[in-house]
Length: 300
Ligand code: NCD
Image (tube, rainbow, N blue to C red; front, side, top):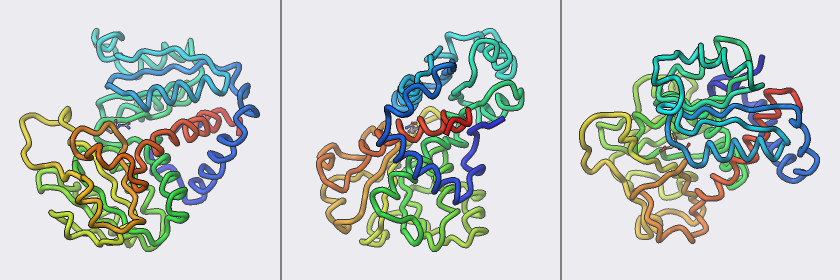
């Protein structure tokens, strides 16, 4: 059974194929519009979402599938009564053919898949992983930069709790001659396990505390929100805000990505700058998710 659980499951060849298929589906949408006519997709979100849930649902609908959905599963499902993820999957597999799940627990998607009743697509598991996001990030980088080997990437903001960063680093580690710069305050530094993982793959990781420490010709600045829902207490000076003044210190070829939602870490004044690619990035997610749904059913 095919699941989408972790960015670790992909090889470089898989990524190349997914990028190619995403373009194919995007440019021939009619051809795919009945591929999942016979499928029902359950969409279980135990944490808030705008893009991921609605783009997975739109992807399913565009492929002809039907959806059953709980957007507030942490309060609106039997989870409040103490039902385990495994039991929930056993039940839902009697109704649906695949399940997209977002949950606060790092192990949620793996637990759901362990039941082995239907394909599971991880739409965000705690601070651990968000594989479909990292695939759309890689797709966007490839489209904008034309290559991934040899690029310099800065990850900025909440490197500790940001699951999109954790999944993206796993995918970047499949490429050659990547340089990664981590810009955060110490309290939100990248956990050692990811620094070790990068090192093992021969990727140099440099810790920074100021925008000035990043190379001016950096290819990608991957900005993130401080994940306030994942820790107790307040934070101060944790954001490294990108405004026009900051952006203009970088090359005209540097692109700004963000998984969104943004709070204050990207000033809307840069939205119309051609280097601001986060809305395009979010839109790409729809087509990447269409490919993932087709893949788990072996229909592409
Ligand atoms: C991200 C997430 O949920 O991890 N959002 C998303 O899916 N695009 C990032 C975030 O919430 O900060």
